[in-house]
Length: 374
Ligand code: SF4
Image (cartoon, rainbow, N blue to C red; front, side):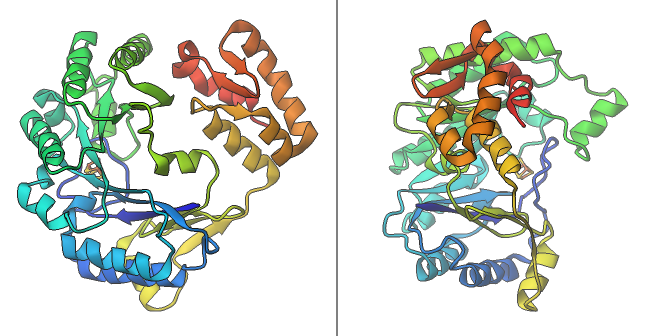
């Protein structure tokens, strides 16, 4: 089983913290749709005939595409791939876009999951982040989806905002939990190079929260999520039992996926590809039969390291039998030697065949992961 990711590189406006590839000019929209359809046709054999289990429209802001444009992409997918076993079809959306009319328009499309970029239920936070919506719009969007039967919802939240207090973060979490969404992801704010927020930090206009506050905010998140009934299944992801994101989980478990659109990444089980992060170059290359991606063939060492990085992010951890089967005795011995001190200190824990990072060490997991890499 494999996944398809469609990157939609359009946003109505740019958020202050974002370094994902997208643009606010929508001039190329029609050309983009045709290019995506063409890429899907050209790469029909990429996942080697495996049935598609998940389809994910991410961005950018996929909800900036109208239903007929989304429908055109679905037609191309259905024409070239086996979607008979497809279980999860996600649309990333901005709360502003999910009007009654829009939800009505997309009703006939195969979406069965919506991932909403809420980020915060605090209007001051939303203004600082330069988001388009406010708290009320976010709540309305969630309710509207639920009323129309789209109950498999996820919301994204950001914490660690400048001057954020524990109380403010708790209020945010309570607002989120009050909506009874079965899945949410919470990311610590990062100051990515080239973003307005990064410039504000460098000029001294904005001061990041300290490490100690970040750790407290994360621990509060874990506690609150657990008492609201969420399973913490990945460093940043939480869900009610059974509602984990099948699509994201496939990235962490080494399944094949085809990424279509500018800047999208793909993995076919032996090589990785990434499309050019430029809409005009992407469309131009596709219409002139020129290459639009780069490719690498990861060595065994690179694949071992990837398994460590992705596996330890999840509650399923590293499976020792799989480690041995995929990478052999030497890598397994390296892992066991490096893991020893962390297992004794309780930062890693082992259950039967699996080794995971314990909850108390999750926020500082980068150092542990580095030590386990080769
Ligand atoms: S966070 Fe999302 S909506 Fe904001 S600029 Fe980035 S891709 Fe666009």
